[in-house]
Image 1 (tube, helix red, strand yellow):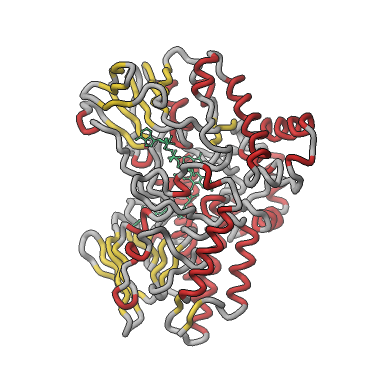
Image 2: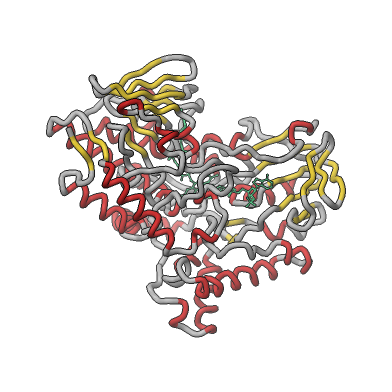
Length: 523
Ligand code: FAD
Ligand code: N01
């Protein structure tokens, strides 16, 4: 049984079938797509290029599918995933509009029984959580929100029918990746947009456009090699990582390197030097470079200063990739309110009141993010061996072995979740690796006559220590990010993804499998 029908759940179903198993996927949404089903806000698109942000498991699929843009928008990615579901006849094993609320392990039969919101029960040998890292919108924690008389839209639960902003006064909270994508699009349509910024983002331009046919031909001529290189990289994507330190070169050379990567678009700038994410002084050089670019993109110097991020090193929150984000603040119909200077007091019936006074608004857009990585798992009442409750076990932060399983919960698999490279990578690369590892593991259990697999406590403790140790060697803990759970009040502050790099991680997973699943107990 698989919970979730996004990139992870769809491929997991395909993989299980391929290995001769039967499976059922339960999905809360009404269609496949996961992230790309729910996040329909204007401007939603990926920040990994289409030719890489796609499945590699089927040569005909990757050859035949035609992407139109370098960074495709949400409707196109959603069409792609619907095409995959149809092409491999996946829908017949997916039950939609079905939210799983509980999962209980039964020791004598070594099976999992899940309960759905509607009260239905399903039993299976394996329970695979493909529930997504960014699938539960976090509570916005904005005072007075319930008093607002106009409509309130969250980017992650956007109405299927779309929203007509024409002539309306729109207030936007949130300037992370979702806000950075949505604000320019809303500004093109709305009467006026007021952006309430709490923490400025670091954003670099996408330079999006139609997919270059030459580039497409080049990749598709040897797609397998491109995918192999993605798998052999630390970010799950080829971005020309430079092994040098930023201190190995002089200022002029550094500027040239940053400029060349910046003008290519996207987050390749993070690969400019090997120590950008580990050494504050090295990071200062790239942070300063991007801050200077922000100044150049905004006409009013005062507005530009308010848009500059100083609170954290570049890359320690997911870098945003934009189309005209900063230029949007040059429009007459856009106002930036810096909540660090003009503190938010409350939302009122007619608008938003800050220390500066009240702004009257017709509608609000919340781009306020997610209860990331653990949110979807902890919302299911998961009970393992001897009555262990997963949400309690993870009370001080998620504990996994390799991000794939957790002690006390036999035959429970997690896809691309905490303890794995996941959100620090091109996620499709990370997802394919997890799905394939899990498929191979289940086949191993079956061919060798094992009924259960579960990490040992020692292996899990060792992995959790390793994940923490690796994170502490980076600059990541310097940002109050969702990677750390810092965006949700009361959530334990633990760096959740594995920052040791994708290729390094995959090697460890493969070694574990080859050594008869070292660190797991098989029975
Ligand atoms: P999801 O796509 O989140 O799917 C999980 C599914 O599980 C959802 O459909 C959900 O409804 C379902 N589910 C959860 N809980 C339950 C339950 N209890 N019962 C039933 N169903 C349940 N990553 C990148 O690498 N590059 C990008 O450019 C990129 N862009 C992104 C843009 C946005 C707007 C967002 C929000 C995320 C983006 N990501 C990106 C991350 C993205 O989430 C992953 O790339 C990928 O789509 C995750 O796939 P998934 O199947 O693991 O999870
Ligand atoms: O969410 P976020 P997101 N009052 O948490 C602000 C992926 N993604 O949906 O920083 C005022 O990043 C909050 O402010 P602060 C990607 O991995 C990718 O944008 O907490 N403001 C912040 O500005 C990404 O990282 C794409 O001070 C409040 C914003 O809301 C992840 O999803 C596109 C507030 C939340 O930013 C999440 O991105 C979209 C409050 N009460 C998403 N509460 C691509 O481009 C929160 N904020 C590929």
